[in-house]
Image (cartoon, rainbow, N blue to C red; front, top):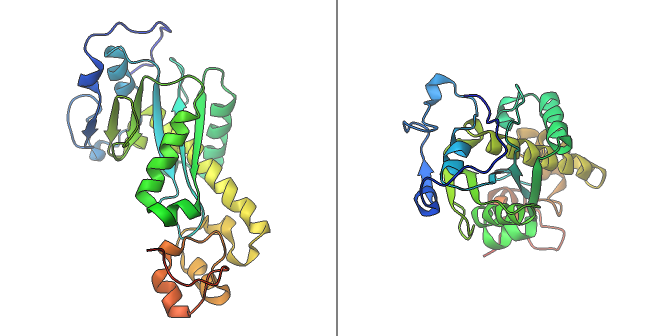
Length: 255
């Protein structure tokens, strides 16, 4: 489907309420209902759906870092200008690191692309759990946008407290261009943050695995114990196995 040409806000054809609070499975037909077997690429279909309901602009929202043993969870919200196109824009997991870095640069420097970033810290992850921390980072990303979006396209689950009409898309980063752009920004920022952490915590080789639970990372924790970047709520079994304590002297997971 070609990118939209007009910069005029589309006229409303239905209410915002009929658009918002949907969750679309990847196998569902209709708008955005391409099956995974067809090898879909992200496109404008869900953005068009929002515009047809008079909702403009639309922000795509995605996160990076839900699963690692260390580091924050990071979310990005991205508004793409009508007509934006890049042949390699895709889910961040589907592109090579060099291409991802190029895409992030293009997104940051293209006029009309609006980016909001939100971070939930390790302390927040341990205090409220990773799912709530992810939602917190997403809300912060949306709040950080310059222009306020009229609607959200979200990868995965509905965003509680989002305050806007939204559609949650299963594997949305492979289906919506706005979500794909958000996935690129979130992944690049978080990876850079974890690489920078190497200077303070060289024992763990964070540039290699970005905090994920690789065998090498787990072995490093066994040898050196956890550092302040580690999520104690993710390390219960490993700490019990090794007897290591966190730098504050506490070896327990949060209640």
